[in-house]
Length: 296
Image 1 (cartoon, one colour):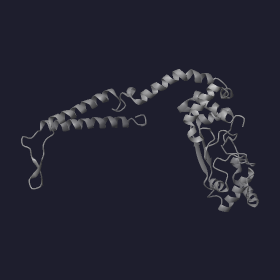
Image 2 (cartoon, rainbow, N blue to C red):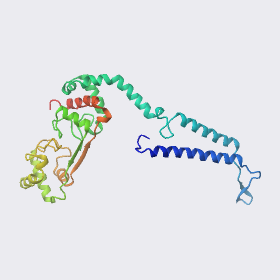
Image 3 (cartoon, one colour):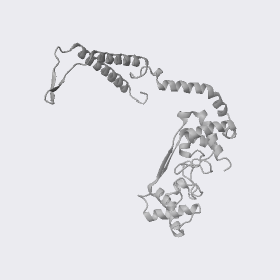
Image 4 (tube, rainbow, N blue to C red):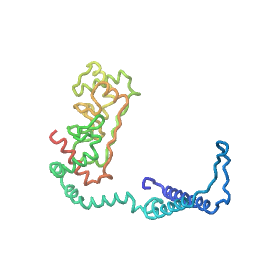
């Protein structure tokens, strides 16, 4: 029920359950009080003389239905199922109780590391082991178990940070998440112009390129791209615009991939963990991420 934002659904479920039980009671009472003296036939005939009788349900069968109904009422009175009643006995309550016990047991450990500087926590073996376990649980699905990333998911072991690699900035990224958007230029530039820009972008990081196209692409880059990527292509961490002069390519550095990126744009999101993990756990997780790129 916690997934529904309106109290209507609570009343709806309670009404539906109550009406269903009442309907079953009415049907059972009708079958027990109105038992015909003479059994009628249904009118179906097979093999000349074989007919189907409309026999009422046996008493013992009806008693089993009554037992089922009584069990249902007792169950709903003890366990959650009738709207939002008895939620203290449900799975959510059990989960919250387990979390509370874990916080009581491990909370002081997280609090102790939270008081320390991120770089000091990153160098602590105990904190590093804790951070690694959290990373493997919550981050490895996108960034890989070693933090080397994948297509569309940043490599956390190098020195390239779209939003900045300062310790507090990394912590902020994990806490509040990030939304990165690359504007599509397919409706602004022609196919040839996009290819020119792609060659110029490749030239910024020393990749093979068509020099004539790169020269034409620079003019277009200065008109369309410098707002985010700066005139020298080194990017802007305030916007999450990547540095185009290094060797880190989130989606690939081939000419075809860069053309695809410029034409269709890109959009990606780093989820926020502030509400889910809390700042104390994120502090240790951020320190572990910092340790992955230490020395790069």
